[in-house]
Length: 130
Image (cartoon, rainbow, N blue to C red; front, side, top):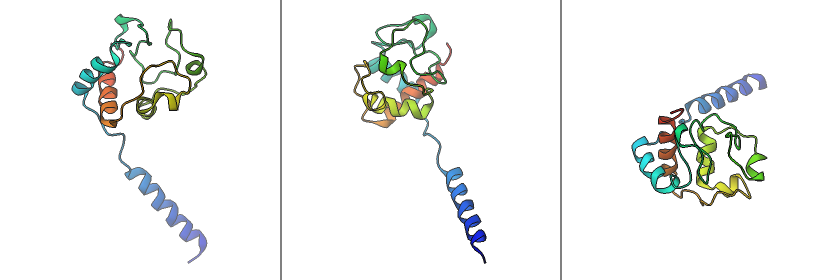
């Protein structure tokens, strides 16, 4: 057996491990609404009708480019970001906003409990586009 054979086995094992990896754990939208209301709702609306508050509107945040909600004045740090708000990016941001976006003006230090962040993301998904 040659090197190509063992290399192909290694690639196949790697592919199987990647495909078998669990997806982002789903949160609980009902718990997420309560968490959103307590920790996020003072600064953000989650529906289109709400407009902007101190923070940008989070309606349809999933799939949106960071720093791009029309009519909100973002910090230079957030405007400079080019990432899209995917679930993994939101989870990372909600864990430590200032680590993902140094010099962010967001006055929230992050959720120490990743389940709370997952719940908020589940809630935002449930009201996406409303």
